[in-house]
Amino acid sequence: MTAKFTTTITGLITAATQGTLTNVVTGVNWMVVAQDGVKFARINGSSTVGPADPAKFTDFAKLTQSEVIAWIGDPCTSSVQAELLAKISAQIIPAVTTKRPPWNFVQANAGSIPKKTL
Image 1 (cartoon, rainbow, N blue to C red):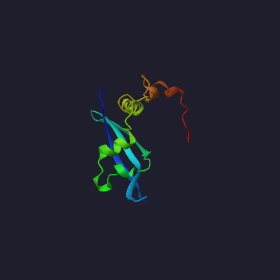
Image 2: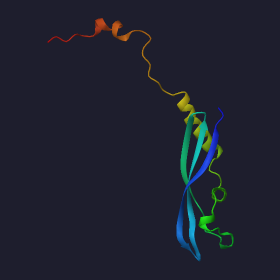
Image 3: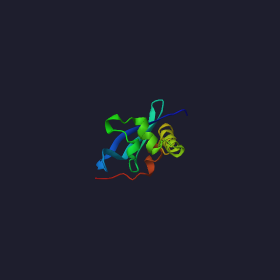
């Protein structure tokens, strides 16, 4: 199975002010998606961000996705990848299925089913 993994930042939780700074990111909502052909799976999560460093502060309007991912570390870890691949495998080969018996069940049991009389 060859899956492509993509991390996307889906939301930024902000504090209006933190010291002299405004619109300070304090949390990050993210999603990791694995796609293998037409099958896909996703995991959503969130991470907190420590106090902002005024010397390295980036204005909210100038933030980039790669910068935010660098703050929290890419959530697409090997364990997240394994979980996503398991979800995709379950779509390809269902773990549990219901099958009809290999014989004609109704015909084989017709004589043993009591008939209702009215």
